[in-house]
Structure formats: structure tokens, C-alpha cells
Length: 81
Image (cartoon, rainbow, N blue to C red; front, side, top):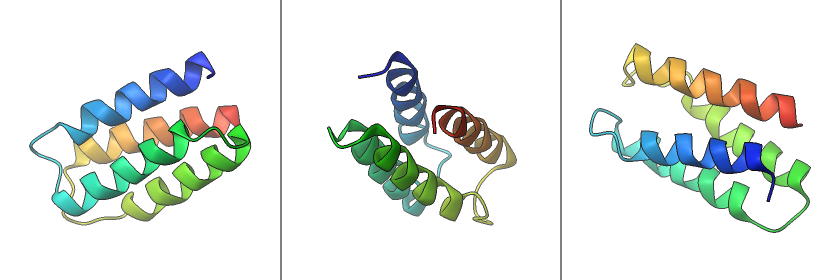
């Protein structure tokens, strides 16, 4: 697995363990982690994860700090794509 993806998974896991993150957002983050851990074509896994993260970026229940972290992760994923 690409080291960049490993770092992104670590960042997502950190977000998932944050108590300030709403449950519905945590579920999508965990889905993104599962997508990235799949042994499929990396571009497909990255696109699936990006889709999940794009859907939660506009969640109004999310703290602005968490939203910024999501956007940073999305940017890292887009560099891999």
C-alpha cells in the first residue's frame, strides 16, 4: 500500500476517534477508511473515499475545524488520483 494512503488512513482514523465528530460523519469516515484499505485498483479506492468525504464536507452539524481537516484529507487524496 502506498505510504500516502497509509498516512491518509491514519488521519481519518484520528478524526473517527474524535468525540466532537457527529456519528453520521464518523460512519462516512469509516466507510472511506474501508474503501482505502481495499486491495482494488488504488484509483477506484481513492475515488470511492473522495465520494464519501465530499458528501460529508457540507454537513452543517460539523465543527469548522473538522471540516477543515476533511478538506485537507480530500486535497491529499486528489493528489494521489
